[in-house]
Length: 525
Image 1 (cartoon, rainbow, N blue to C red):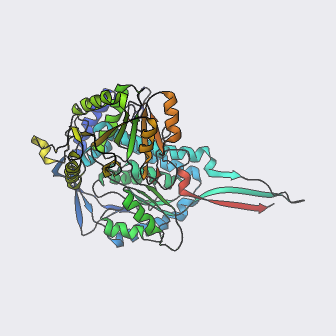
Image 2: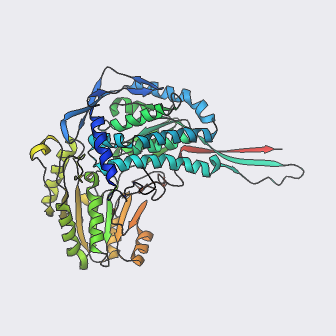
Image 3: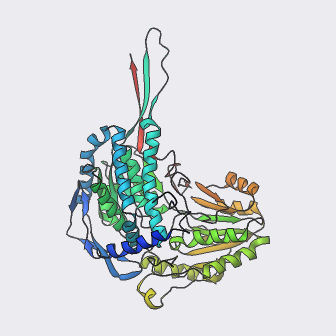
């Protein structure tokens, strides 16, 4: 969302114009009229219903049914793949400006529906109102940026050298062409951006798409499917299926009629998909984003207020359920007490509650399983370290209806404890004292993950941090977020090591090419 004065991003959302709050309140009333509605899968442009259903409930109030969705089968998966394969020849052979124009129409429609989609997201995922609106705005920019890259690179058609053959003229051209049917498997935490972002890039590149969202949060992915339909995408170019991983998901992942896969989720599931796809009749591309154990390093030369603010925002935004959340902090000893005191103080002031309310920063975790895991992990951590604040479930008044956990800061956990390396995906941040930056950077890199990392200190120290840290996105001295806040065209987002498989970052100059393969045309004239 953008006007002549204000552009909404994860960096600007902390001081929005009043109009955003007013429009969000209006949208809440509108989307509230949709509670309990049944939504079909969308295959070849048509709604498809199955005998088995499942309900999406609000994590803030588990008694509230937001919608009813289809529990798809292997047969439904095959129908979606067949529709995408049927649509592929026409879509892929269209001139790239035509495909780009279609995708810009989709992006424009999302932008026009930003408040309704943002309100649905807050209710569905538990994301606070500004982060919800921010994700919708990010989705628009992800699609537009992929289109920009295709335009700026002339559809990725490049003249190559001419063979030095006497008395003959040769012409060699490199072109990037789409693969075919692309599967998008998206998580609950960014249900729109991580469905529509990769789908938009894949479709702009000429692929057709089958998307399966998380069963915890299918609403906004369904709204994206409606945007694709309403913007006039040809039938079968985008197909939307819902249901359990063991039926529809397995059928999609195991199909040799799927030409590429983009998955965002846990390392365990991502590696299983990678191995499963390796069993196919030949190698096909797999793009994986598989979480993080994101560190922040604080130098003795850091500004305490900037560091504490950035750490708290990244640790507890979306209840620590971002793959980029700050979950571990290493602080040089001379500044340790000042930073820890300020982090603890800021955390105590966070407002936890209904994520649709203006004053709330932290909503509920996504489901009962995460809620129970919070207490299990706290039992383990509280016996190993010192809980400075939080550490409990929140069950007062209306909070008892949902899955609310207190934002938790814990210190003095032994540095060989397993939870320094294990992704918790909860509102818990662990803090340790280190002797120097050499130790801090070594511990920060001692992880199978390599998604994001933050640093606070001098400019010279930041340059060393950038040189030594093993992550896909490295931030220095950002009050808006120590490890979070990436935006298309500004901070392309992706990971190294166990956090990502492609080495290229979404929303960057090298991402849309992941959905294309090179073909060289060599002709004697």
